[in-house]
Length: 131
Image 1 (cartoon, rainbow, N blue to C red):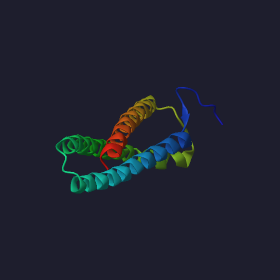
Image 2: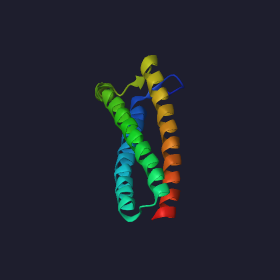
Image 3: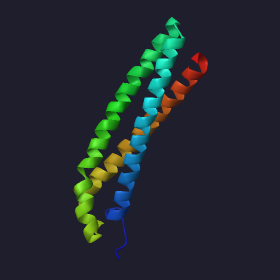
Image 4: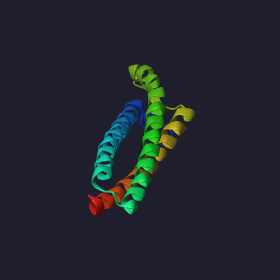
């Protein structure tokens, strides 16, 4: 078997990363649904104007994050046929265009996770103040 380098990667490794990314994104999507439930509960329990204004900020942010998640899931799914055909050959990925895409998407995922985690931490602090 050929050794992987910075310019080649085992297709199974890339496929594994894609599956992990999809699972992470699906988890975040479910988590946003849970947060939406808490936001609805807060609206019913609290009529404080400051809380409701801050809550609106979080609702908007989670709507945006949900859209980003959908876009990223769609982008990942576009490459599923690549894995199906390439995995049959158990090849190393040497296609520079695909490898560059993979690395860009990896950076995009890392950036999304950072932003999402910051938002989640802010939201948890908000909930601890108002629930």
